[in-house]
Image 1 (cartoon, helix red, strand yellow):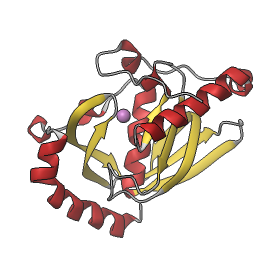
Image 2 (cartoon, helix red, strand yellow):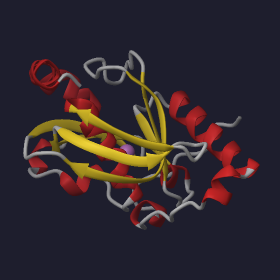
Image 3 (cartoon, helix red, strand yellow):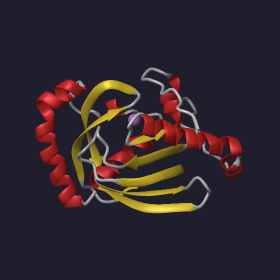
Length: 191
Ligand code: NI
């Protein structure tokens, strides 16, 4: 396995819709190695998730894994989930404003609106069907990674640019209030 370089905002691969992955291509040793590297890179960078375009490969594959993440201590744990060719459908109208950041956007956070209930349909790395619902902050994490596969970045969804902040200033001025909001989301939506 290898830690891959993470491309940064401005790289065109982050702005192109990712290509669908055929069953044959997904099963190839080369693509399976790539998925191992994507996971390794996500873990190495302490990301909550990572999408293939973020390591320069424009294919519709992303991973989410949250395990007591020091970058996001308020996020509930999510088991390692690799999802390929996903379709994401909002369930209901509930939304909440959350702070997001991105490994492809260094040292910047901002508030975006996310659906609180989504359905994710995809296949896993072995081509087996995946069909699950995600809720609350976890739903937001899946929407963030799904956006990457559509060529979108969280900055596109920041409704009020005045909420952009560095990590240091998030910690100094916004973390405490956001943790209270995040805890309310977790207790209301369970994710
Ligand atoms: Ni991201």
